[in-house]
Image 1: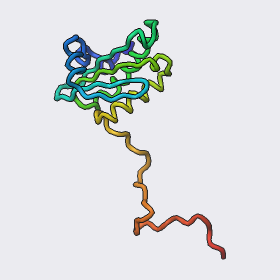
Image 2 (image 1 turned 30 degrees about the vertical axis):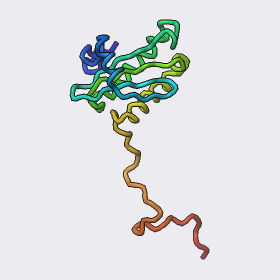
Image 3 (image 1 turned 90 degrees about the vertical axis):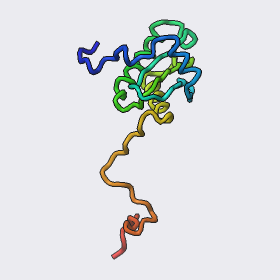
Image 4 (image 1 turned 120 degrees about the vertical axis):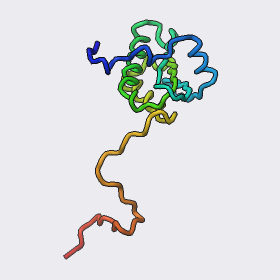
Length: 146
């Protein structure tokens, strides 16, 4: 457990009540991939996360808790950049066999597809030159003969 209070996942950041889940499932938008489904209702309040990981995903509690732990940790890390609203992640059976890195990758991709998380910034300091840009002549692939 982390002692840094900013790194915790407070109760105010969770979708907790059945009525709140019902609103997200009935009124929210949804997208998915083979591992996870994402239901969300955009809003002006800070982002809140709800998780649904059934026994169909993994019959063992330790497996279901691992999935929830990975998703909560990912949300904790990106929460400052996340758009406001309620998010409910539904784990699919393939998530029980997926590695933590696969779950994290699938979750972040879903958030980006939903428009809730900005796209990652490309590395480098210079913009890429396009071949049709007249101010940047093409780079020769071979050296001229002398």
